[in-house]
Length: 500
Image 1 (tube, helix red, strand yellow):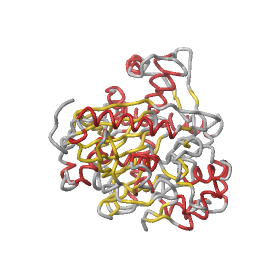
Image 2 (cartoon, one colour):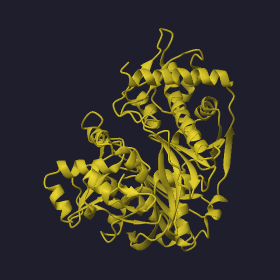
Image 3 (tube, one colour):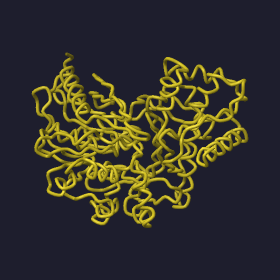
């Protein structure tokens, strides 16, 4: 065990869609120890995606304990938690036992419930209050589904016997031994039950979605106290909670207007910070809480892509085009540049700006000259094309609000270690792509927020000063060629949405 000065490190617990990870960072953002455990996905039906909440907690406990023991628990000043958002867990308040599996953010089983609410004319009012659209992606219809399909759950929930949480709440509850049932404003803003202007749960929304207030957690600031976790025999304060994309924005130092980031993990999530201004989208993007510090909310525009790294996983695991995801860039580089193959990865529908839960994936434009390399390239390009969809919608919304669109895009996540992908992203979006020195910024952002809550950082300016650029990618593809390829992408999406 390495010796560290007392209370000099911050422990980040990063619970994602495919793994659970703990990392101990110092004030400069250097990682001193980490532990990661893969998370199993469960697909019990078409468009259904589930996780075992008990497995998540066991992995969280194991990773946090391992890292604390590696660096010495007394060297840890605070814990910060970041999590996959929207994923929904219900559990018994007395026993702590989950009511079945957690419904994951990717799950589409509540599409009919969302359509019924749209038919009642409620989407406009839901968007005005929450910044979100009526889509199965968000937590509200998932909660209602569980309450209606787990025996006796609705009665017990109304009696106050059942707790709801996104994964952060589930982890806080368990880390504090059931003493704290709380979430933060960023996660609350992803439920479709939280009024982001009023910064409170909304009784009308609760009524429309059929969710009793008794199940809800308390909403707290992003940086601040969430109770004490018992880790490796030591009580450690939990001083920050943030949804993974908001945490990544902090790790990327996107802390004010004019800054934008995109995180490429299982999906892709782009956030453009709008400061204290709540910008409503006219282009089917989301308005979300970027953070809440000292009671003051900051906002962002967000676009969500469901399939980014998951597309490459599919090419590897289902089509078996390659054994290692890193091999995809070698194949893409060797592909025929004149190929017109398009892969539209709508395996669980399409996210922003389409929000089409019924679309399904397709590979189009194949000729006998096309093979593994061209399909691999199409898979990587599909992520770049979807990113352009988001950036164009963001630019339009910001222009309508009188705000300039950021020219540079800060990128992070597992996919951006791939130089070919980053250059392709610059070429197909026409944007400067900035890759930071630390690309796993989600955990780093949680650590920075916990450091702010614990007083390790005096202000967000201290966080911004810690960000470092590793490499910049400038567009090399000529504008007309870029636009021609994008037009073929839009045509492919239209064919998928129209059933072929």
